[in-house]
Length: 363
Image (cartoon, rainbow, N blue to C red; front, top):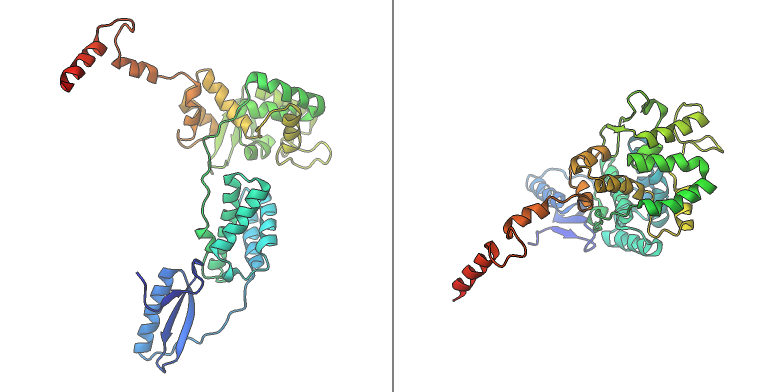
């Protein structure tokens, strides 16, 4: 229902204004932000006019460019987010696309159109589109807290549906070719491949490992904080222990586990060797995260319970773990068999009785 005195200056922008007459009959307009805020502000101003109170002087604030919002958001990310290093290049792209625009004037449609074009050009997955949308929304949320802007147009950008059920894992046969490539060309990185396949660690957790997280005595990794913001205790099998020992013996055993052999700087991921290995091995549609799927899928095919796999992966619930359910023993076959005859070759029994009953009912 249309609200008197409240309007959207640019249809679809999500930025609402109010229009009213002061006690002197002068027409006034103010930018309010969201529609609910505009309705409340309109009521407040009308009451002030009725009571003859002095209204606030209206003045135009200096325009804030989107670049200023990004700078604040980037500083926040550095202080608070584990994904800061991946946020940096994405914020740089957002600056390039929207930086010169006055932040208050950007509309949801403009933001969505630009992100959609970038997604089509770069062939983004839906999750990548959503990450950019989230960073824009973060920029505006902080802008509202800092009183630089009054609304968040990124909230109205459509969230892309992600396919979280995708499971691409390497069979033991498929693993042979990329493993050979890594052994021949990237031998120093072979322990990274072995640890990933035998622990199922997320990329961020594996490359964030420090030697003080390795408990040789109990054969465990004690990771204080994961993606789920919870600690994770990962048991190590013989292959994982061997991989860690190989790295330990080639370094000084201090600081981060995985570092660059050339610079000594910590490695953030294994893309520089894994991507080349899967291309040379002619594996299609394979990514580093598939090693985590490989760990879980192999456990399931060997009969591991979903609850145990969930614990090892650090899942908070079985919702995500159920994607591997079909790879293991299925109790439901025994359940549905309760409805059938005891002898599948028999012409009599429950099935025959059910058919006769059904025929009688139809007659």
